[in-house]
Image (cartoon, rainbow, N blue to C red; front, side):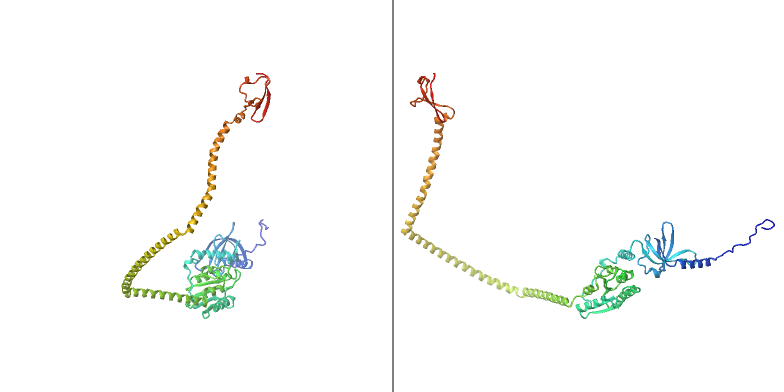
Length: 453
């Protein structure tokens, strides 16, 4: 403190002044040192691709946002394209926007959260190309019946090309096969496969192209899930067969190609028939041609016959027919006369036979014996019938007699009183007191004595 009572500072802090450029450079150094290779999670928003090929979007969570850019060189290698609303993990580095101290993230790779990146990219591209109509059956082209020149786009060292060449040579020797060597996985594979397809499309040498490789994982087969490969297949001037992996493997190339083969070997079998099949087909066509020629000749012969021969033939047939009718009439008349004579002779013979039979004593005795036997056999039957008739007449009389029988009266509770001499007592005065009487009941008899009158 001085004499005047004022406080004097003995040390004053030195000011650190940055220009904007210096601050920009300092921040870049810090970011490059500490935030060069980081992962940031968030949801994509405001994604857009500019004319330069760069993609700009924002990563956001509930409280903050971070501007991001994916340059063209990195964007082409992403397994899927940035899309609004997708939760992702972004790998890259923090940087400042050139000329402005604005923080942004330069993204090198993206992975969807909760979903495999490759599978997500597959579904995304499949949906996109399907909406464009690249999978429609109507745009699929038929393979040539017997291609003479076949182009193959695959690795020159893989098993796929060996299988294709071996099967084609066995099924139909002499077919020309041209290989466009291409990497089928790894860096540069997509460009090489696309160039191979475009070569055969542009040159016009091949009649059909086989594109494919042997089996592998989803990552190994990914070259054939790239959009550029799919569009090259779709725009190829000749039919394309996709033969990627094994039977259970499916790629975008399979959906776009004109024909999908489950394996490279199957593609070789589908693209060309065997020599024997061709020979059988030629034989069938030859037989068909011969049948057509014979049919045509028969038609011409029939027409010639109708024009030059039918009229004389008709006249001749009518004359022959009239003579035939006369012959038929004479035959009918002769047949009728013969039948009449035979009938007359048969009747005379029959009459003579009847007369002879009537004079034969053996026949008369046989007839008498038959009549006697018939009479003897009929006698018991006549006696039985007479007994039945007599029995029928006797039954009513028996019934009437039973109704009039005094025994039936006894059955109703009455009794017959008889004297000792067997006379029926009709009047009480006829028996004195002390007489012994007999009483006949319906069942049994009683002996009684008269006590009084």
